[in-house]
Length: 115
Picture 1: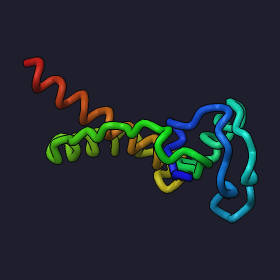
Picture 2: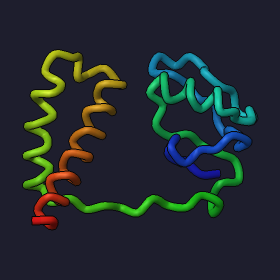
Picture 3: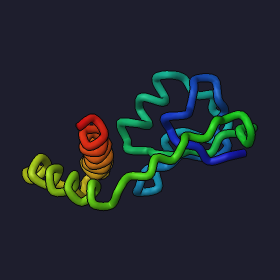
Picture 4: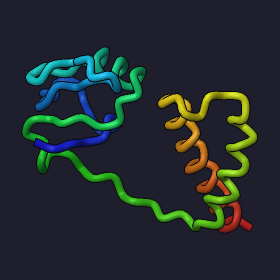
């Protein structure tokens, strides 16, 4: 068993432990074979990681990209203005904001290398 990111999950994988929402309600039971529809629903619910049966060595790890903290700070300021009118504590907005900061920081870093 391994806990893996939802982005690395594929249809046909078997859930090793119940997947619950924040209030503890079971969304999918252990032993369920995932479908593309399940994965889409889990993303909608803001689920980031799940435990998969037999996935110890089967999943490739995503390479870690190290981003300069200065670029992250600049990107965070830009994202603050982009997300100023939304509830940043909502799980979907929190995830979207974090992805935006990472993407913006990478773009800022790429511009520095292109110049």
